[in-house]
Image 1 (cartoon, rainbow, N blue to C red):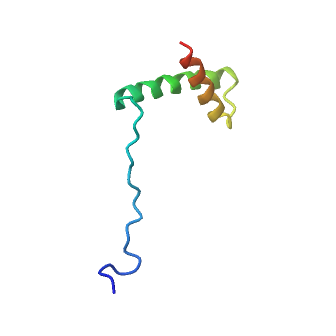
Image 2: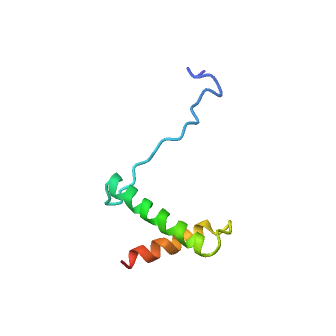
Length: 66
């Protein structure tokens, strides 16, 4: 018999560090820039919901070319 009663296992998610080459601050600044541009794109097309991912990806592409 195990020392842990059935059902007592933790279902808590654990963060796995990802090596991206960016510091957390640089990544946060990048996300903030993308978020702002995606919002501008959303407003330009009338703010219709359901295109959030498209707006985000377009903003990332535009900012990569700068």
